[in-house]
Length: 42
Image 1 (cartoon, rainbow, N blue to C red):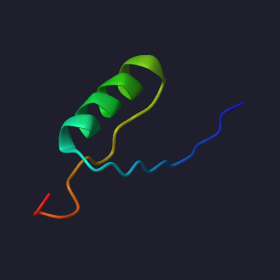
Image 2: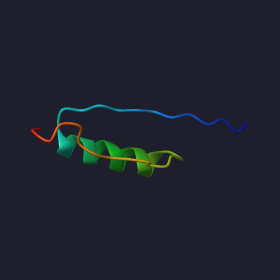
Image 3: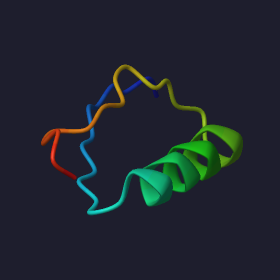
């Protein structure tokens, strides 16, 4: 079965975002499309 999906994760810390992205990419068959901060003040 070949299914496609798009997921979004919103976090309050840029450092936590890097850790989550690293873990996801290492543990699942996923592709990272975009990683950025939403608010420049964070």
